[in-house]
Image (cartoon, rainbow, N blue to C red; front, side, top):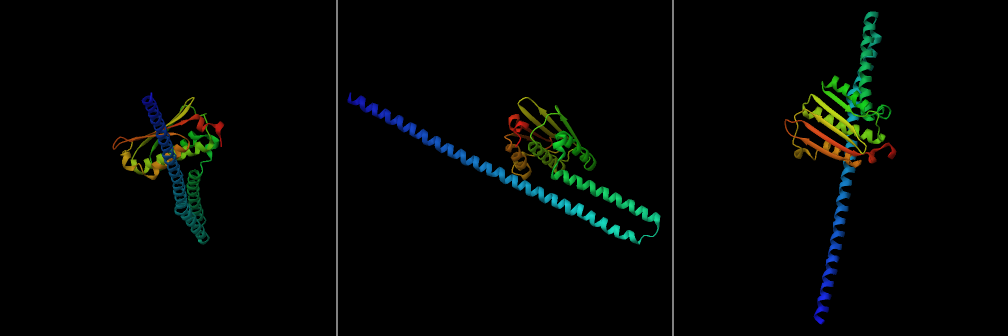
Length: 257
């Protein structure tokens, strides 16, 4: 009987120790996960700030280098008009300045759209992407095709603008590095999720070698902000494909913030 009692005490002690160890282990794992998630959230916030600063710098540079210089040129040329006596020559000069002003206004419109694509709120993402496609065709000889299986479907305005920024980042990367001639964007809506597929026929790259690049981190950060899933498939000579998946409950208009 005495031995049985000792064995029973030993078993109870082992069980108590096991549960205590498991409890400590689970608490430690939870702490590690919380720390990892906190670091991840901090990284996403840092990426967002870096992206904002980069966009501000780019817009400031565009305004200074393009619009500022063109306005200075127009002002200089307008000052020279007072010295022209011949009416026909004066008329020709005025036409030239009007052309310069139209070009400046067009560039300002493009910069403004990049700053805040307000037409998304009124006309939707597809309409804005089709305008972008028209600009790419004129400026970069690049064919952008947009396919939307439900153009009437709308999401939260902040989400649509951020998705436009994501696609802008992808397109900018294609234009700068991929030497592509075609880009295809598919927007597929279903009852429970929203799928976005992006593909170009460019030179491709090795994702593991550029995964820490600011552009890719920006795409991932914006996607994760809406609890979205992010997939990248690319290899040298095979183009680049992105797939994004968002749950409707995370981006639906009913959840407008």
